[in-house]
Every structure is written in structure tokens, then in C-alpha cells.
Image (tube, rainbow, N blue to C red; front, side, top):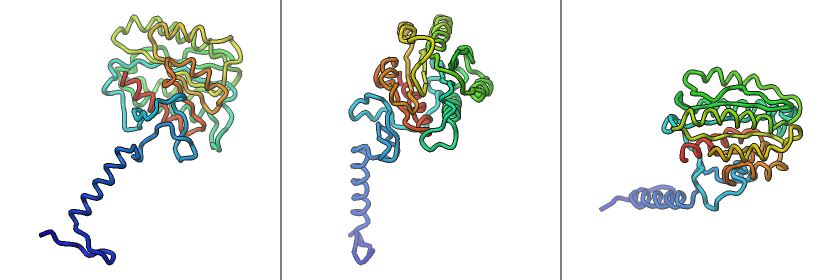
Length: 260
């Protein structure tokens, strides 16, 4: 016969209490109410908005969890195309740092997830664009690319097309050289292009190479539709309403890259 325990003025059977707790916890899991469920939650609910612009209903595939590229590093290739225009020198969302500092923190954390066998490249854009890191195996060069990210300085206009043209040319060389890799490009900007012309044609050329394009609109909702069209699929387009969401978004993109 099971003994009862006196607690709070009532008697409880320990085995019934444990069973009840297990049932309640099971229902929470089935309902998706885990503390790490980051699916498309608006800021008013205490997490972040966005994240894909057009989410799949009930999609829990982007829940955050510890991740590295170790399990897919030998086939992962990522090209970063980053905005360093003058608007990235402003503050937003009550942040204590300018926007480009949040970009640096998030992208360096993303790079640190990658394995030495992964491929990585980087271009950045303002009034003009630059190739900051040619696409190649990361190996022991994490410190080098992180120093390139750290050196980004905001100024000038937004010539997105020039950076994407550099990216296209880099990808044309790298893809036939590393045939066993799956290539992705991450385009991150806080505003639409305003010099250099419409980048849509070069974006379509990159898609035609078989590259998956992920886009992140940072703070400015007016570019969400453009970024959504630029991404390979609606679920590959993200919106960060503030500063600290960037790290979580790039971790979600890392998960998607490894699942492809």
C-alpha cells in the first residue's frame, strides 16, 4: 500500500503527484510551450518578431538550440554581404551602441560556429563595395575574418548591387572549385539601395548559380518586401526589429543551412 504525504494541510500520494506533473509537462511540450520556442513571436510577447517574414503556420523547425557547423562543416559554404553604409552608424531600439556594432557581434558569433572545413567569404558595401575576405576554407583563419568584421566602419550610401556583383563573381569561381559544398549567401542591410542601381538582376544571377540566399532586414520595415523577394524563399527572409535579435536570427539561419 502506497503511503500518503502530508503537505500544506492536505494528503498527497507521491506516485500520483509525480504522474500528474509528468502529464502536465507532456501537455506543455505538445503545445509547443517550451522556454526556447522562438517561432515568429512578436516583441510584445517578450521574444522577437520576424523571423521569417512569411512563416509556415505551426513551424517549430527554427527553435533555438546549441548549434555548430561541426555536423555539416565539410559541406557548408557561406558568403556574407554586409551593410556598412552611414545609417549603420546610428542607434535604434534604445541600444547603447550603434547598429554596426550589433552587426559585428552577431556575425562574429556566427563565424565562431563554423568549422575549419567550412568555406566563408565576405563583401561589404557603402557608397562603394569591397571584397573583405575571399571565399575559401576557414581553417585557422577565424581571427583574420573576425578582424575584418571588426574593422567595418559606417559611412556613405548604400550600393548593394556592387557588393552583390563581387559576391556573384566570387561564387562563380568557388562553386566549380568546391563541388562538394552547398553554397549560401547572407545579405544583411538596414536600408534599401540608393546608389549603384537595382541589384535584382545580379540577385537572380546568384540564385541561378544554385546559391541559397538568406536576407536580413535590420530595423527598417520599408525594405522587408524587397528583402523577401531577394531571398530564395519567403522563409529565408528575416526581419530584426531591434538590435539583440540579430544573433538569434543568424543562429536560425545556421540551423537552416545545416538542414539543407
